[in-house]
Each structure stands twice: as C-alpha cells, then as structure tokens.
Length: 88
Figure 1 (cartoon, rainbow, N blue to C red):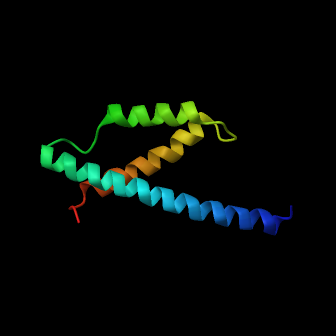
Figure 2 (figure 1 turned 60 degrees about the vertical axis):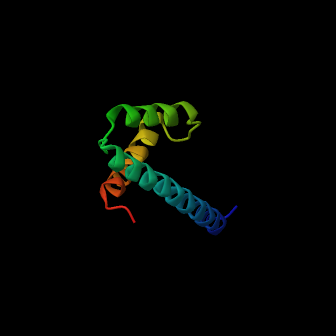
C-alpha cells in the first residue's frame, strides 16, 4: 500500500472512532444525569482505575498499556467534563 492508501484507511478509522467516542459521550451524559439525581459525585477514582485496568487488559498493541491509558485519561477527562454540564 502507498501512503495515500494508508491515509485513506486512517480517515475511515477516524470516522469510526468519532462515532464510538460520541456513543461513549451519550452514555457518560446519561450516567451524569443519574449521578446528579442520586446526589453522587462525578469523579469516581475507583471506576476510572477500573476503566484503565480494563483497557490495559484488552490492549493488543502496538500501543503500550501506558500509552493506551494516556489516551483514556484524556477521554475520561472530557467525559467527566460532560457529566458536569447541565443535562440536555
């Protein structure tokens, strides 16, 4: 494959990733609404660690577990911010 072929493949993968991240955001927003109604905190360090452990377990590379967790730390940070917003 040529560079342009790989870039086209990456574009298609990015489209899938964006759809999945937005689906995750919908779920995070719903959880945020439930937390708000129940008076629960948005920040749950144990749950976040569970997510990091899970993604490390299912990681097959080529990214290291540390790199995958780095990516997920940012995703979770954004999702946490979404949960803090007023429900729509």
